[in-house]
Image 1 (cartoon, rainbow, N blue to C red):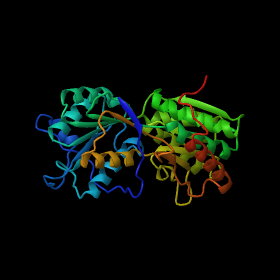
Image 2: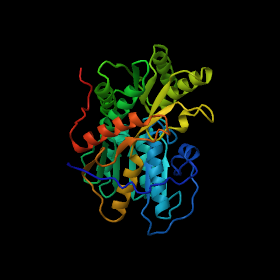
Image 3: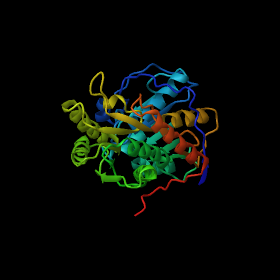
Image 4: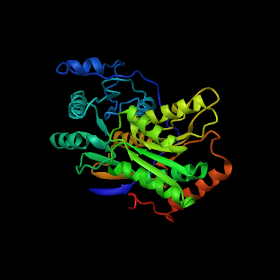
Length: 360
């Protein structure tokens, strides 16, 4: 499989609002009820796209939601509507849904189909082999097939900046990392966060915990409770919908004691709204953005224009503007932001190479 870096076009990608749901087929009555879709008929010339979520769900305020925003943005850009011939998504409630959902989209003749997350690798691989004339995209994994584009990100680079922010903002000298599954993509988040924090404070104490799930907010809350109770004041989560529990714990503590030093660093999408306690208080320090949405738009447009990069692995990092920190809305002071920006330049230029695994 060929590999190359692919620059992201981040000019003006805006998510269009849409009703959630998706169409099924007569053979899948149950899925029709869960994924019902409404939408106008699109023109025959339209290049249609659709995606299948992992178990985190399309409203995870994170990875899947970012991908769906990209699908909607592409649809808006080309005047498409939700439904067959336009754009859509199907939500997976369990691992067993991946292949069946992808098959449903194939039967509905979408031109380009996305599998969001490493858990869809086997299903994408199988269907790509069975349907060589159809085009697929797998996000966060690699599939060696000429009709599949593999998309990966240098999460460790963006997470390094999150680590710098956490260590510089911590008053206790204790910060935490909450991961979902112990897999390579989340290992990259962890490694970058640890390296960034130690770069600015070699003596920083970093508690690190994997919950084993991306869809268990209760596990995220329990883990955050333990960390905050032990003196941790900044937690970076890379746990999908499990991270909602981290926010929940932080908000409860802040609501109970407005002077409590508790922060959360979000992941994948800007999770500022997730940290809102009231109109004046927010526990989101920043978020490590992963440009899944812009990658979706970028690849979809290339495929539409006959330049589908099948068989390639596209890698998006700081240099390609594929990962970055979200606006802190003033939570991070200028002197700390200056340090973050200095490290950003060093990483983007190659002066600093961030490891993909935590060094034991």
